Image 1: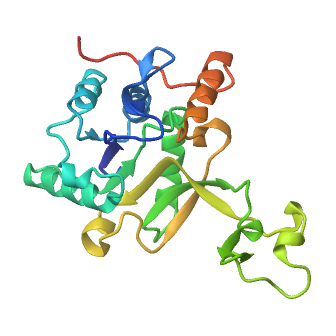
Image 2: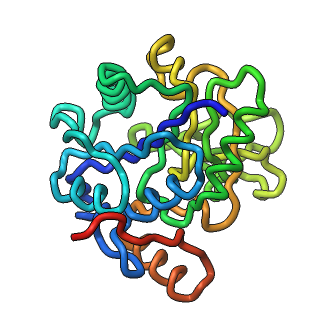
Length: 246
């Protein structure tokens, strides 16, 4: 089996849901569920949390992740692209003699993505000969065929329109299927970083998430829905226990 690295990004400074990475959900910090899922999957030689927050680092270590050092602040801004901190992390680990064939990005904001989901995506990527990476997607609810751009006092469709009935005047069921990425997971060969300076590469395989495994906490209302899903039993969180004593 290829060697694997789980990367869990958890920068501080979220504006929409402040402190979300360590905010308790069903009795544990949010980040604990991604750490638990990565560990339970049995796929990774290292579960690594990248954060610029000492508080988050302490929580991550308590739940079994490694945080050898904090992410540099210049790589942890609200507009910092993932390629920057991933490139930095891979180089740092390589200096310590730790190199991996595959890496997976497991964002804390998808707490219902469990070990089984990760294993399913891993197997899908390995079975897709020639793919650089795999990315979680789901059918979009708001179709781009019905999206508009404002141009002065008027607006025009975001997409070029076909002959006949325009996309924005059609029923959803008659529109071409369009998928939107969610934050559940990404898995890629590390060569895409070193050779293509990318986290995805050129050939990206789809990984279709089902139900709550693609659920993402991006806004305050999402947090309320996550609590409801967990409390009602409609969605299952990975089982977690602190690995280190407080």
